Amino acid sequence: MNQKQYDVIVIGAGAAGMMCAIEAGYRGLNVLLLDHAPKPGAKIRISGGGKCNFTNRNVEPKHFICSNPHFVKSALARYQPDAFIERVERHAIAYEERDKGQLFTLDGAGQLVAMFRTELDWAGVELQLNCFVSNVQKGSDQWQLITSNGSLQSQKLVVATGGLSYPKLRASDFGMQLAQQFGLAVMPSRPGLVPLVMPARQQAWWSELSGLSLRVIASTARGPEFDGAMLITHQGLSGPSILQASNYWFAGEAIRLNLLPQIKGIAGWLQELKQQAQPLSTVLKQYWPKRFVQAWQDKFGFDDDLANYSQIRLDALAEQLTAWSLYPEDTAGYAKAEVSLGGVATDEVSSKTMESLKVPGLYFIGEVLDVTGHLGGFNFQWAWASAHACAQSL
Image (cartoon, rainbow, N blue to C red; front, side, top):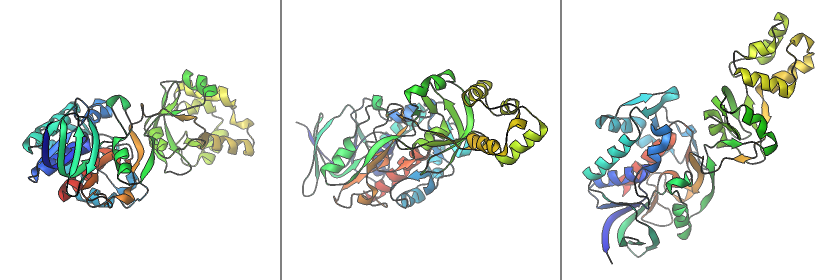
């Protein structure tokens, strides 16, 4: 059986794993990058509708969910978006900036994967795909891995196996199981940046409106507000504002929608419409799709003539328009989730090196950690930054 010695073995050839292996290789280390998938960078290839939102110009710690909000600060400060943008430009990859600082490739995410493949070669990293790890043990001074490609040994072991989102891409909880094997705490995993499913008894109403989009502010009891598009699906709600809010939603809780974020001072606005005798449905069609206006009118039976409204009824309408509370039944699950929340507890890991505080020589980077970014390129920036921080300490 093959037995080979490396300075570093990185398990997981996704965004964080490739980045870490490259940076470690550039430092002169003998690096093996392995993955059980047949191709590297599977999540990069499909993200952003195939265009990959690879970073954001405006990255701050507030854009991340973590039980320790200070954990992300060190890595993010030491590898900022400009550093990755420079890398992309060095490979002549065209990109565009969209809303709120989001950067996407112009000609497809495959170019980013090709960039990483090129740099893996430049850095002298050995890449083994279709390689399954069946056992990991730590000796006094080295790691021993039993794999489908034989027995492998290394001084350092980096776990970059991601989370549970996109099971079709062979996502697994391998990294979290490995952490638990060596006595590290793991925060429970759940789908993140995921559509929300409404109760079955309500789905006929939503299904009739499927495909419609409108601007809302979505929020939950425990998270910030997110202003953006809401997309109605056959089962419930999706779109950027809903995906963002889903990170903070738990079963049994409400999601609150402001359906008129364009209007500041809704009570005064309604009073003005009342005085002007403007039909409410006519005005709402300036902000909502026509079918949504009609469905809303049918569902709640509002009177088009605001002259018929008492002050109490007008106040209730204002509340309904700006703080509509809905109670989803569930999320659409890992198959539709862009990320998974939870993972290896950050209290177990050095924020400067990503090394386990309990097990010397064991490192965790990227999504396998209990760090989840908002929508908009933040999760990829965490992959690059945590990988870079780790590689500098190997």
